[in-house]
Image (cartoon, rainbow, N blue to C red; front, side):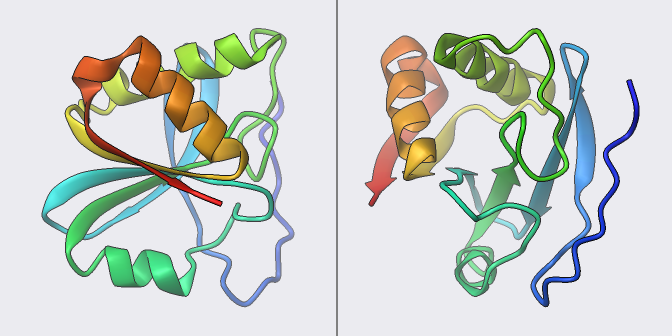
Length: 131
């Protein structure tokens, strides 16, 4: 599969780290120390380290992955449904050994976070949904 190329010139663009999640090269950004927080983004929150991420990272170990098909994470044929995204993030958490975490979701990421919390409650210390 070809590597995604980034021509992002946005002022807040930050190069990601990558992890293989069941064959999907998943981009994520991580910074900080403290309790782990997984932030699942909404529309337009990809390929950047936003000022409020920086603020959160002052007190937490903040992990911000990109959903398959957004930013620098390709959409593959393995992702056919919303349920597949839930399974993807279950494996993402396992791959990076991130449990338990505080889970935060914004927009579409909030919907995903809610589903994750329903199906895998043992993985999460708390759930915060942001509109």
